[in-house]
Image: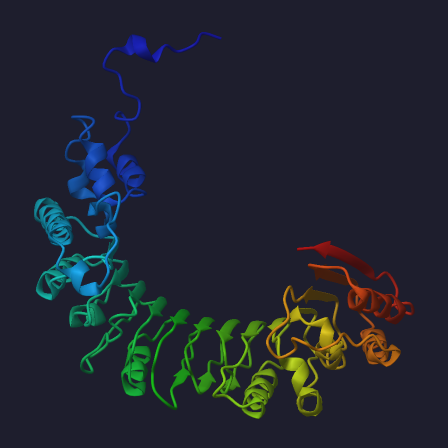
Length: 430
């Protein structure tokens, strides 16, 4: 076969010979500054960046390679180099938007968390984006107020508002929210009143994905949305969830005090970190019990509650029967406190097929100093609970250290599955 000699083609450039839509697609994977720099390499590409459908501005691309160390925030803000970086970033964004052709805008990303920002300039940039009907807007910024035009951008399908903790106020008033096509909404480090948050959800009638990370809403905040299908909550206090069509639910926090109404839920990940000092254990138990009652219809449950063993006398009577659950994962399992966490769940999942137990790598503050309970009675309830799961097919134990308690757990699993057929028990180190 004759080999093609590209160099013999002279000025032939296979990439440049591609049609504009393909080149635009390739350049769309780059940040806007990189795309502009790339277009300088060829006359054929020279003006391609002026018609890109994706704009990605990152102020970090305009900072010095080695950031100086500051003794205070005031010293940093007064640094002339920082001011120069901000000016260069703003000048570049203005230049790109000014020279850009009047073509539709698909994606608009902007990040300038490390630089000072002029709110009027920021508002002008977002006004430009909204006027060109973007499908996706992704903002990482310091500004304390989001321009109202974003909340009436009817073309939006995805909106990501990620603020930095120094400024946590997005809405200074209650704007009219009209986002009829929005399907994905992500908010981080934001402060909204319950009414503002309610208005925001009401203005997104077909919302399917919602992420909330370190959001502050005040007391008695609820999430009520009929079209919501996937929900992630991280360190954000919500008192009531009503989502009749929700399918997946991730919840990571130090407390759980909410009421759940999610009848269609099939997958849940519940991770309750060690409760803060101001939360009594009884209050933590009430929240945990409420959550578990609300997950009665799940098919797959991932549960990580390091302190649950301390609530032994409370939790067991409160659990419902999980008829649909076939996959259970119990994480942060502290064997110093016995097998309670696994046992009281197993009694309530008669149709379980797969069980995963993750050993806690380090003891929490609640169990430090406790001696491992290696008594014979500790694993007897576990054996009985395992034998109750007649459909069990697979058990995996992920451990970080092999000790007497781990051996006792394995013995209990082996003994409990003797009467069950075709149960595979796997050990894996993590």
